[in-house]
Length: 526
Image (cartoon, rainbow, N blue to C red):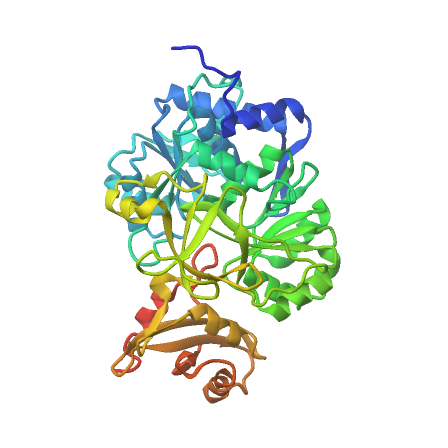
């Protein structure tokens, strides 16, 4: 093997190695589960990642191979995520909410050779084990101290002292594939998205400082959503800057607030729905007093909620941003008590450093400010390709720009505002209606906790605007809601029907699953 050039190389795995020397005894990660916690220092994390990477090679998993992992947040997940990066192994992470056939699809489509599965998810894998075409080895993530299945590798043992903690001798290039992520599959089977080491490293640096997400070396980063989606990228960024990464879950909000208070968390991110709950929580002001920055995702934040959050936590900076799996960061801005309130809660900010953005029509012509169009961009964090889908890749990259499928407009204040997914725009009577715009009006109605707007077939209008709303106000009626909307929206945007529901279907990252609603109510006007 040729000498590995570590003098100039600076992939994302090299950054952890350097910080293990710089911050050897500093806590890199703390993981909370069931009242207990585990921590690793930067040196311990780097050593564990190296051992895991070296163990993979002993079991025939080498650079360029694909490893699949399906698990909730846990310490083994974190070590493995760094180990895959160190080994030059392409990692694909599986949504723990997937049903067996969805799990089999991703494993087979990604060409994974090894699969690590959390103990509580074992039954899902066993149902499709014989359908997994390329899997040569199975690994077990043992959280409950259950017996390891015969012939399966115990992930935790793979970073024990049995294996070398020396830096793996793997020649990794920036254009190698680090992650094979999968879209949420809200319309069909998800597409595989290949992200390079360069993509991941650039994203990691985006979280740093006042120009990005605001993390600093002394930040305590609280992370309570699944790592298997964008969480890994935040973790890599946190460790790239030398901060402390605190991991938990959102399954019990009071416990989450206690962790934030105990660890003095200074940076976090929540879905919009959590902020809605926080402003009505008597404990939130005291429990969150250490917060300096908080990012939100999963939709537009009602302006009254945004204002209440900043009044409750006057030292907080809120960070709305826009990104997607195919493009790891596109726009962001920072809002606090000293900045003017945005014109709408669907603000996504301005293009990030080294990012070029246009808003275009269906013929790729740039539209004037204020007009809706598709976001197209150029950026160092745009994916390399859709795996095994050359046609989709060509379509996304046409005319020298990455076409995102997301609609937005540029306001006269210079900020960009998210409108909708192209596929979720409602075409009614020959005009387009943004579901997000209607939801903003609905979510500001007293008594409505959450709403989802979607289009269904209508014999006269092609599609009709329909709203599903969650409300605890028993006096609120469909007629009331439609009347309020008529005072705030053009007539063609007003919902033809308002349906009261107990809950809105959401994806694992808090996105509204409009396809589920369209399917449920497809015969509403027939």
